[in-house]
Amino acid sequence: MASRAIFGRNVLRGFGATQVDFAIQRQFQLTEKLRLNFRSEFFNIFNHPNFGFSNNNLTSPLFGRLTQTLASRLGSGGPNGGFNPLYQIGGLRSIQLALKLQF
Image (cartoon, rainbow, N blue to C red; front, side, top):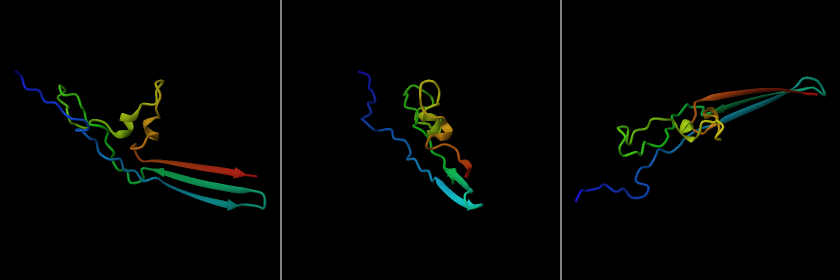
């Protein structure tokens, strides 16, 4: 009788996800009726790497290895759905700037 390795449920676990996002906003009163709003948003400000799930195919030479970041692993943002990896949790550091003129 050949021996088989049978794993129980939740034996292979991935790493936790850690991400710090930060936003700051400033409003400038140019005239009585004219305002300028500036906003900057920083996503994954410390550029902490978040890895996806390990390869769980027992026959693969990459079994148990981490080959993708969490953002890439969660979806590609294509026609099948999902966000672009830039906007997923665990993505690269990204900065967004906005300028709005109100009158």
